Amino acid sequence: MNAISQLCPNCGLCCNGVLFADVELQMGDNAGRLIDLGMALKKKGMKGAFAQPCRCFDGTLCRIYADRPKRCRTFECGLLKRVQSGAMPAPAALKRMADAKKLVEKVRRLLRRLGDHDEHLALTRRYGRVMSQPIDMSASEDTGEARGELMLAVNDLMHALQRDFLK
Image (cartoon, rainbow, N blue to C red; front, side, top):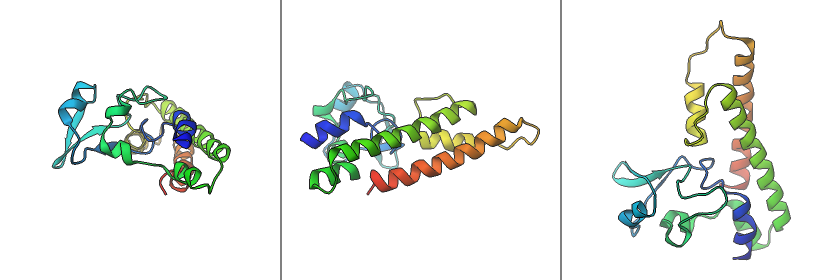
């Protein structure tokens, strides 16, 4: 529990729409109870799911932690696993988190520069929406540069997330 209390409140990437675009409910999750607690559920194939960023995440902590869905209860990022196993000290994990959050903010800044201000949408969805827009060859040079910077920033972020959080 010590690693969780040290790391998780300083991170939130599993709840804020950075690591996941949505989370599927699992067998045993009480959809009605989750709705009563403030979650907005949607249909995803044959399952229920909720979009990320999670409406129950306050920026630091989960407002429904004791009643959170099973997938949320069982997810442990790679950094947490490494700290819990003793393979990485907590200060090193906190540094990696801070570095990842700087990359996230760079991506968000570039998305805003390119006209996407929807902070209630998962980062990957925002990126896809911006990059699927046709390239206007008559647009300012800044737009082309920003798209290039965005592609590089997302690439750097994806490498960091794969290395530190998703393994």
